[in-house]
Length: 297
Image 1 (cartoon, rainbow, N blue to C red):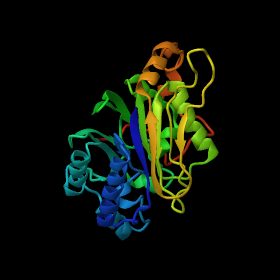
Image 2 (image 1 turned 180 degrees about the vertical axis):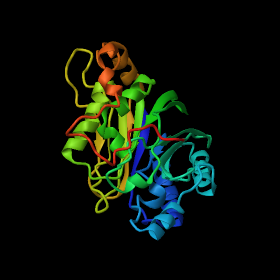
Image 3 (image 1 turned 90 degrees about the vertical axis):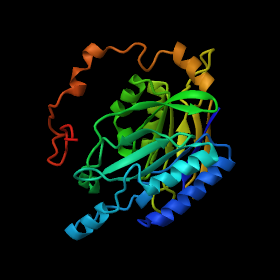
Image 4 (image 1 turned 120 degrees about the vertical axis):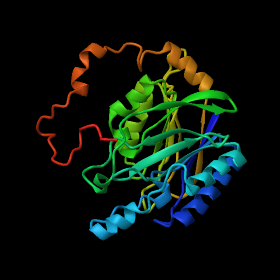
């Protein structure tokens, strides 16, 4: 089993020092529960505090951004070694121009193996102040159970089928998803579908009530048994209250299922999908604030 701890904890707004302390405490709880990996909600470093509308407020908000290899992050690298556990920590990343909404996967030796910036920024809201990411990446994560191929997507990313599909095509077995919005039945259904259609395990950590509504969850994507009997592949779904919730993924079961079943990349017809990468936008989907061009990184 690969045990993932979903950190559904309350942040201290934009108090980065307090969020560091609360985050390290949550990692200790995860480690005591036998987790191989701890997953935080979106932009934990600043508690997903929105960017103010006024110029002075925006500058102060941008000044909260940190470097991926800075002191705040170093504390989580040390924790990963101390706990012998991987950590996905999320933060406002300092970047040339506007900052990014980022997540870094730290392995149990304290090494950063993957840093991902949210591609589908919420450009209709305060995330228009961010620089979007430009790719979905996958990395090999060493665990006590051997290597597992891991990818990441953040919050609004999961509402686009292309996000999880791109990660599956890059070889992801497990997709980790920091979140910071209300998880409605439709959004939970979307997330289940991402696991099913790509035959991947997915795990999502979100904020508890009242900031969001909790419901951190995980699905292992194994929707049928070998005899064809359907199977509920939801591993866990939290309630609204703060806490650390654990999800156990049977990697052997998942890999066996992926070798024999029909979804993901087994019977796709890529020649028919040209519209998926077209830049053409038609009504009623034209939006003046939609940033479709690749970011200038």
